[in-house]
Amino acid sequence: MKIEKQAQAGTMQSSDLMVFVEPANELKIEIESTVKKQFGHLISAKVDEVVAALGVTAGFIRVSDRGALDYAIEARVKTALQRASAA
Image (cartoon, rainbow, N blue to C red; front, side, top):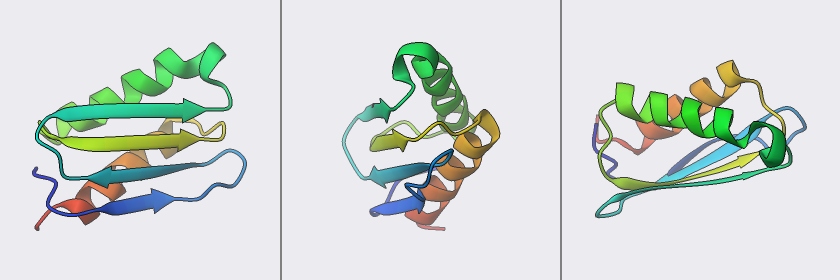
């Protein structure tokens, strides 16, 4: 999957997250979270898993987390990436 345009998914509500994606020459993932100290490694692993599963190799992905569970992280990242693709 190729990121063709800017897109986003999610909300800034408690227990949710916002995912912003945009085209870039290389893959860069930035994660901000209210629970980064405790769960940052798990959030990063879930984002990496979704990105790999969709075959994304380039783009800028910014995640702003407010304590979302992993199923929400997966859904928001997938949705933002699908919205940003040409398909």
